[in-house]
Length: 65
Image (tube, rainbow, N blue to C red):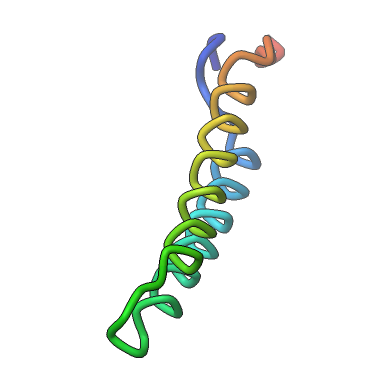
């Protein structure tokens, strides 16, 4: 693993968070009308997740040889 890569644990955690965000989006669309407030919550979660991914990709973890 090189700097800039995610390890398996980080990748699995990101995948679970992304599924939660997708569930939020699906719940917002359930009644056919998405209010500005309902739209903002998944967008905020996605922005937060993007920052986490950036941090995890640049956290200087390296594999042991």
